[in-house]
Length: 157
Image 1 (cartoon, rainbow, N blue to C red):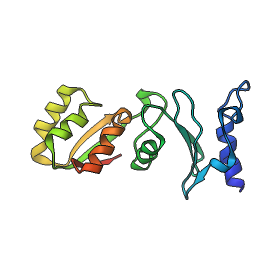
Image 2: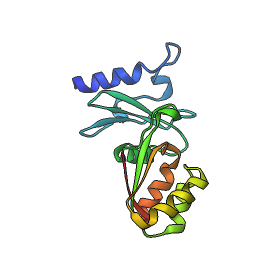
Image 3: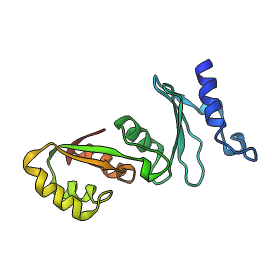
C-alpha cells in the first residue's frame, strides 16, 4: 500500500493547484497494477492516460494520438515516450522482413523517406539493420501493426 501511495503522490503532483485529479475523474479504484507499474486511466485533450513505473518511480503521461493500450505496449517494447521529441531517441533493430512494401510504409511514418530508401537498399542484404538515434513515438501504431501482421521483426533499444 505504501508503494501505491508514493506512486499516487507522483501522479497527483503533476497537477496545478487550480486543477484537482478528482475533477478530471481520478478514482483510486480505477487504477490498475502489475509487478512493474500502475496504470491510471485519467486523461483529457492531449492525454490518454498515465503510467507510474515502480522502479524507478516515474510518471509517464501518454499522448492522445493513440490509445493507452498502444502506449503500454510501446513502453514495454522500450520505445521512449519522453515529453520532447529531441529527448525520444531509440535504436530500431530490424531483424527480418517478410513484407517489404508494408515495412517501407511503416518506416516512412517516422523516418525521412530518403533515409528509408537509402538504409533499406544498403541493409537488406545484411540484416539485422540498425537505425540509431530515432524518435519512434509517432511510429508506435505502425510498429504495433508490423508486429501483429509479421511484416518485419524488430527490437527496440
